[in-house]
Length: 372
Image (tube, rainbow, N blue to C red; front, side, top):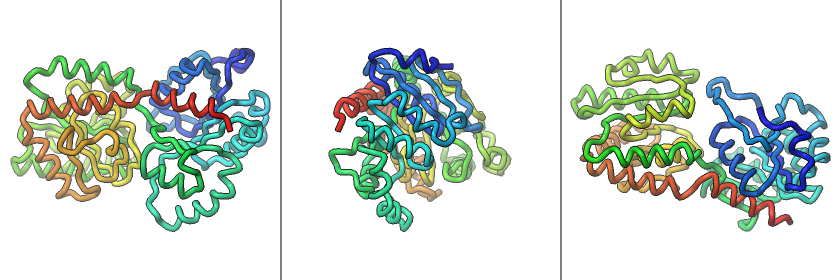
């Protein structure tokens, strides 16, 4: 557990309030870095853990954790009044009490940020949000911190000026994955593992069935060489996909949910990472496996490809939801020589290094110090 309210409120250090929905280890790695780099105290309000991803979390001693259920009604606004945060970071706008608390933080003179990973797609609901947000969101927020270019476009449509938008809101826990990538590059001199790895929850938008179907067809046609496919994760479609004809293929293994620490051994045996999502606004998992020095095969729906995939340099892209396009991308990977795969892995590692929780913390500190 984390520090108590008293333990983090008495010092002269700046106070940061984080209002989050589903907390994951990579988010916590950024918050832990922020505590150290900004010499700050953090009050973190979180929703309950997603039971499909029951991560074990290790909090910095100067992060005070509040369970969302314990702060009903005006309790969040009261918390803001007590701690007077210099910086407030709010995960989206789905929680109305979060919006009220963020508005109070803004009124008290602090910097108040909305964090967004939703890409601009131009459908009617987003146009409606753009109209409504110009009134409602700006009562609560001074800045928008988004993941990538398409998300920055959404923030602009929501009325934030370009000087009030930052990108790079998500970062992998590079302290966990970069040493793994360095070790992989050091120990693979000539032979490269011929094993695809997919890490994703088994939900409709992740494309597990499409991946199993495509890979099984390649195997049965003699086009998969000696490659295998491993899939890590759980979710509502886990048993259905696992029990499907292609999901039962002898060269496909379903690993179930794994904690980040358990993934090290699995990643060390992998030769490439594949994410066949039909909807993936960003995908921190892409950053993680780039840091782990794996070539990437990503669908066109994966937002993180803009930062971590250089097509032909460290992997391949295919049309989301298109089995033929996926099979073509997998063939290109499979036909690559081990020397080429190693070069792709090195390029992935370089791209993964370019952003980190430390970079994230620098952006947060810059925003906090900018005030208004």
